Image (cartoon, rainbow, N blue to C red; front, top):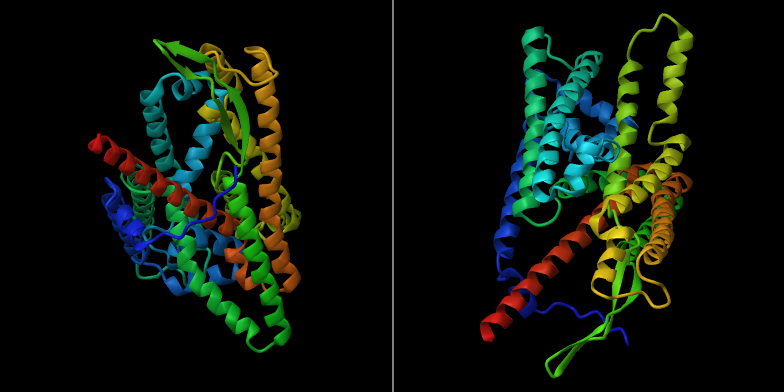
Length: 447
């Protein structure tokens, strides 16, 4: 079948999208929630000299990276400084533990919506625990920065109130992200990170222009870097949209004088089943020990050997170190396989049982266990290709930044590109789903 060209949306198509059933309300609600979050980002924490920490955020790779994903809230030391981090980390831990603990695995796989609600509640509780811990660590970090805390505040009241406010801010961001997921467009957590990255682009662009404006060699390097970024975006779109189609033969059924079925269909297996979540989770896992080590490195060690070990470990795990990228790619591959293993529509045994139940089959393969084994091999190969491709895409722009010596765009490097493109594609797919639903409703009304 010939592939149709891409049709540009007309004014009528745009109006149809805006008037689609429930879509207008979802878009408005999403924008309002993002506006509330961005307003909270601008509200500073009481008793902090923001400029001191802002200077640290510009010069420290770890803090700057965290600041990017908090939408600038960390650099401003706002009430939402922790951002979506505690919720993302909590989600990772709960999902990983659910595979190990049978009771939680039963909640996830067998108890349907009620089980998922319980897991969501566990995630929220653990988010509060992590937020308290991270806010306490953050305040200790500020304590070691000369001039970061205003000396006129009461120390005990300040630390207690700051931990409470930062924890409440993390819970507020979690609540906003869940509201967007339920009542808006797209995944709330991913969308918050997406908007945070977008808010940092003008700053990174301004720094880059100041860096390259006096050197023609740097300008050529910037052109090469932007070309690599553009090619990486194309590869990301291909990775996100690519599917492996497994042909299914459906049996013919005769009802009265009519024959139904008998047409071939297919099961689509995505090349990258986890979307942007393996990237986000990999960053959260790597930055957590890096943040702790950065704080520990501020302490006064009596033993120089211990201090040197901590500093070396911190350097290895920093976002500009070789070890960081090796671990980063390894985590992306592992988490891509993990997501493929827990997704309900990618379970070979369940798919094989359903095919056998309805009399369908894969050409040349017997129903039952042989079908499950064949699907497992297909899924393993497909996921492996997707995981390796995702890891390569994550490395290439970062390596290009090092070769061209333009590190000011590191904040919108491969990681940010994958997240932005992935979230944008998810939003487009959800809009298409609403448009299809509207067309179906119109068809029913016309019957």
